[in-house]
Length: 272
Image (cartoon, rainbow, N blue to C red; front, side, top):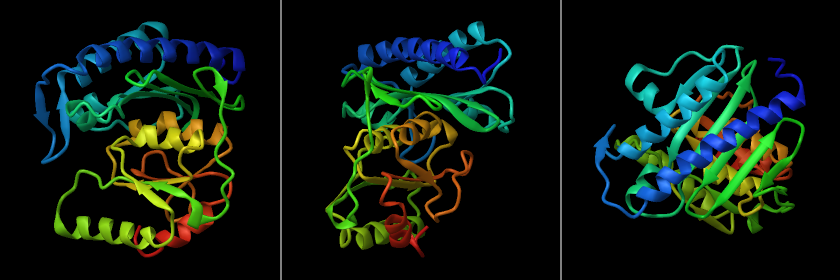
């Protein structure tokens, strides 16, 4: 399959959208029901729905693209995260925002990214509760429910909205560093949001609801593989919070519109 051809990427996008919508239906069907919860850590949760969604997505992708590699959050939790190669690789978070899902807070989504030569080329993020489908193909722009979206034009950090997350690690040193960073930023931005979904935060930057986002120590590449491309195709920037190039496997990400990368990086200096 010649993935360099846009027609092929469009067919990959179509399959990813189908998979995301099918998994999204499972999430929607179980959103208001009692949840069977397991703990991956003190505050890191997984439910039967996470696993059912990943199984569905993997089966569909494997049957359609048998030569492609697969990396998923739940299989990685059990077996360790595979190494990312240059081969076409689908990176899947079947339910980003599991804690939100457990508490019926509607920032939950399916995230699916296709990566070739370690570069995201197709991205899908679907929130079945808000019925928002974000999509992107490399070089073709980013879309929300079929309409072209753009990152914001805000160029003053003092007028910006920033999103971040506190993560699932709760040792005092990590929590202090995280909250000290947020405390510093509160004096520089208009407001801060912590919504509980890395993928949804990235889509917020892509469609201009948020001006900036950063997070360190999140679960893995499945949190960002779909959303990172959507931000870039919407005219936003993706980078390491230090200002260096973004590494998909690093569990660190910064995102901004086209104007606020340097102010964010400067504000994060000594914290990340």
